[in-house]
Image (tube, rainbow, N blue to C red; front, side):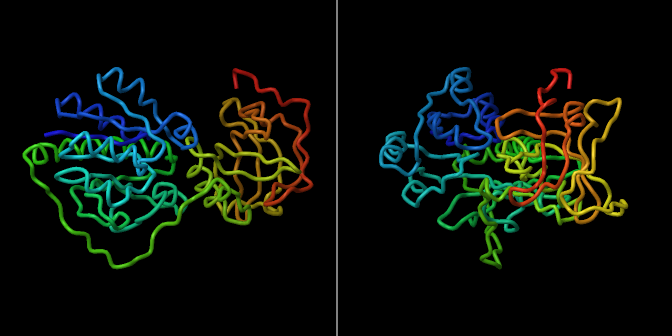
Length: 332
């Protein structure tokens, strides 16, 4: 049995490590070239990992290029795992492993097929999602299901913490299936796909905050797009400001203000609870960490001390963000 692995995202690291520790015959690991990986959210350091595990690592720009296909063909693989990879494998690549190619999708398929399922689950305020181990096929997320794991989403989760749960589920499902796979079996059950609808891809420009939405929806939007993603953003005057973290006030909170209006500082003896209060369509949110257009990150008391007035908006606005106190104190 010869096993290959394709991945660049941190969600695959625990599973690959567990495979090696279980003495599974991993013969080749393929990841993205550093320049390409640097353009992807959540990229992991596969060089250091593979060096520590004693695995041969090959870096590619595109898994569907002729050179990548030839690399996999020469490896003569029986089984290929594709975990934490955004490029869709073309049919020729899917045929390069004798038993088949296994992937994972962060939802309980057939629900939420398509792109960015974790981000969409958080944006929609879902309290439950899941992870599916499946055989990859020509259809998008349409192959036979090997195993599934439900994953709960708490009000305190972000995309990063849900990804950590997904990474654990990847590891556990692969280890559960491994004895049968090493025996040459191909476990799985067909999906009952009733709709062709797919979750759409999300791009950085889609992170623009709509302050007319209720505070809970704005909060969900921010936590869905925070690190390792590019972040939700708004405009303060002519400046694009990223909102990395915020807290939600109930929509029942009595706020008489236009959506996006900066209502003033929120102060607390707890440094992390300090910030700026911003009105939403219903209720309000407290901005806890922002990033200026010049890359300066401001949080805690440094944020609550900002002389900030006006409205945040979808477009450059009349909001003023003055300069005097913008240097972030390390203690904050």
